[in-house]
Image (cartoon, rainbow, N blue to C red):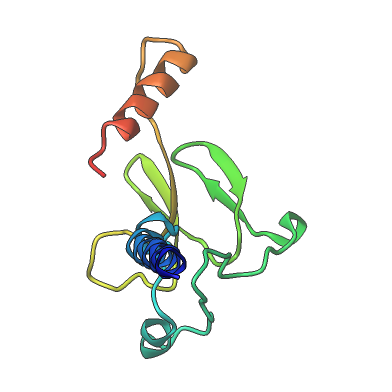
Length: 143
């Protein structure tokens, strides 16, 4: 009888150790959701129509490129179709397009959205060397 009681106590202790280990390690081993997505409350406070859940998703539907307006730059001597919600800004020898995401706030650094810019300049190397230099600059950005 004593041995049976001892075996039951050992099983209970082992179960307790297993539960404690699970409760301790589960929060560490569970993948966390992205911290860059704003809460639905933040989105609604900013009067944004987009409903954001705890996942990354597009904030607008994709319109057909056939209906995109064409931007023509006389300064840079090129034209490009662009989504209608991306307004071009032309300044000196540069053209920039940008679209803000739902959590971007006015008067702050550009942190939520997408930007594309074109500019003129002289470069004596090959195109692939230029791309590799720019890619390295991006990789060296602080995270």
